[in-house]
Amino acid sequence: MLNNKGFDFSKGLPKALENIQFDYIISTYAMHHLEDKEKINFINKLDEYISNDGEIIIGDVAFETRKLL
Image (cartoon, rainbow, N blue to C red; front, side):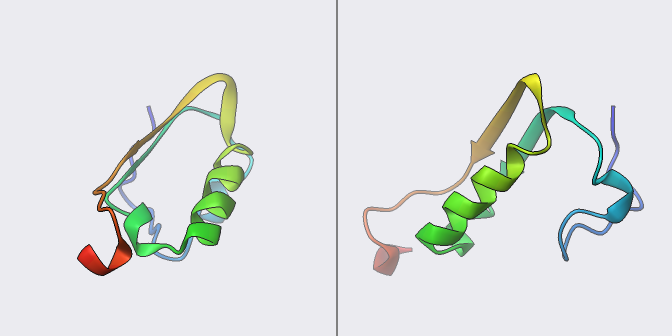
């Protein structure tokens, strides 16, 4: 199990983790900060780091319009 202790994810994935495949990637309450195109790019990028049988879990808030956010 990877513990994020000591890693700063605020500027992206730390270099030490770039060549690792993960069984689970969890993103919570972050996607709503991205524009739609950025969300697509983010999810596509996650695909590079997920193992063949891995799962991507996204939990976020949802509103009918961005204005309601």
